[in-house]
Length: 167
Image (tube, rainbow, N blue to C red):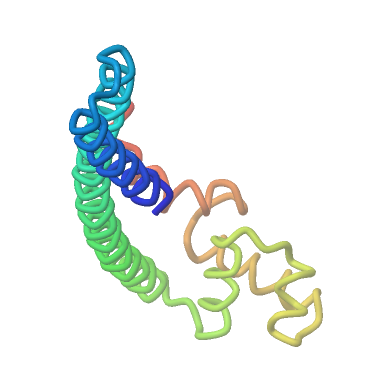
């Protein structure tokens, strides 16, 4: 907006000085004065043209950036959708494994919370049960899964995600 205002002012200066040069020529004003004012007209016109080209260049650049931003937003939405699908698939795989291990519904809830990284105390608060109950359910989960504790339990699910990257 500021550039447009400056461009308009420059065109006004150019127009008014052009009229002044025309009048000065008609009045027989000395040539040096006419040349000075003609230079003002020329410089004002060139500055206005420069600003117009610069504004156009920036406008094109902004349009390209807007297009890139729109494309990036589309890619992010697509990736988020894909991540949601993969997360749902992974959750389903986990649930199927819990069923293969014959975990009870309560044990499945505890197992999901263990995988999320909650402590036994936090799980007891979330499930509104005693910590001893959660501890017993965790032991039962490890026993049924034939895994030796929380770290091995979590690793059992996570190691397949990284298997291709480190082999």
